[in-house]
Length: 203
Image 1 (cartoon, rainbow, N blue to C red):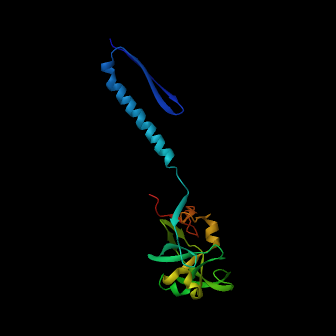
Image 2: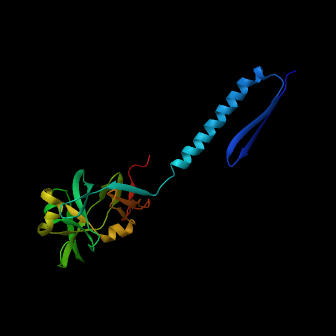
């Protein structure tokens, strides 16, 4: 009776095969199947290592003629241009764009400085969902302010608002000027509906 002795070992996570046979012709098909299976296993492991999960998302930005960073966000299904202002004490919606974006304001007492030298008191803006890339941010804190005097920061097309320092800090923004990208942490997912955000691209 033909006999085959097959031994599979592993060195540094890579399968290796050794065998002793009395009839190679009858055993080769079985060996080929084992080798193919081992290669598929290694391939799957390699692919898994090459595509690690991440808790960050990355979006591109452009730079205006005045040197300001501009990103595109979506509010109420409307595409909007936002300045990324790391010096602003709050995120702001331009008062001229409130109606276009379908937003409402409520009385507030927030004060903010940025894109200028003055300090202003503003109304709060209710934004149920703001989408950046494929990520939804629920109830982000924004205030309303007339930004007409700095519209040039958005070039000839102007801009709809600005994303300020509190938002950038909350989501640990990383700005890469060489690649012109901004990386943000994904917001935590909660069952509650209070000032939290979810990822819209989760399947």
